[in-house]
Every structure is written in C-alpha cells, then in structure tokens.
Length: 128
Image 1: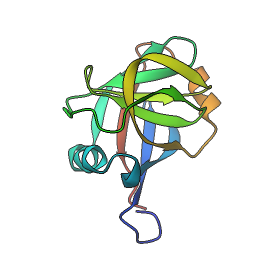
Image 2: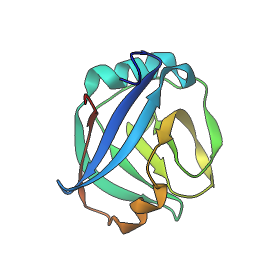
Image 3: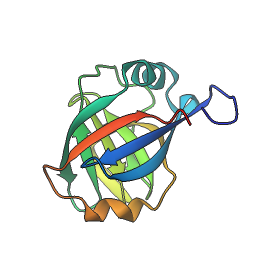
Image 4: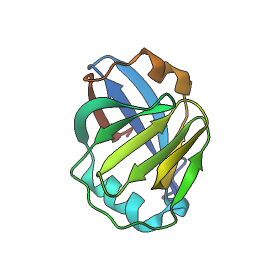
C-alpha cells in the first residue's frame, strides 16, 4: 500500500512473466469497485487491443456501474462492468461504452505499445 494509506493501493501489471508496469488503484474514484478488485487480486488473463488507445484484460470480477465516464487520459485505468475487464490507456481516448475510472499507470503508459493481443498478464498487489 502507498505510505500506509488505504486510499491508494499499488499494483503491478505483469506481462508474459517478465515486463512489469507499476499502477495505482485509487479508492476515491470508485470506492465499492476498487475494494472488490483489491479483494479479488490476483487476476490473470490475456491482453486484447482496445482500439488504438489502449489494451484490456478480461476478469472474473463483477460490479455495477458507479461514477462512469467515456473520456480517458493517457495513463488512466478503468473497468468495464459489462465485460468484466480492466482497461489500460496509453493515449487519450473517447470510448463508446461507460467505463468506471479506478486508477493510474505510474510507469510510462506507452510501454503497453510493446504488448500484443494474446500476451499473458497478471494483475496483483505490490506488497513491497
């Protein structure tokens, strides 16, 4: 956790067992959903392309749509309730579906450009 606070939780997006991207989940963006996600980690899956602005990873997590929006900035992390998917943006985007903002990518979001559809990923809490 970040400096002993429960409002921000550090997480890692690990790609193909070697590349790691630091992220931060922020409870104030969506308190109920972020709490559910933290209790459900780790999540594993495969990368899928999200148009030309990001990637997404399907999960088993189910949640309603609290505080949704359709515009995201480079580095944002959002959750798609309908598809149970984490969305990671490497450039600014307007999307057609309501997504729930849940955090930020702390490393360079453009590192996601090196991923390919089908890459294996794991999302887990960074406990040290």
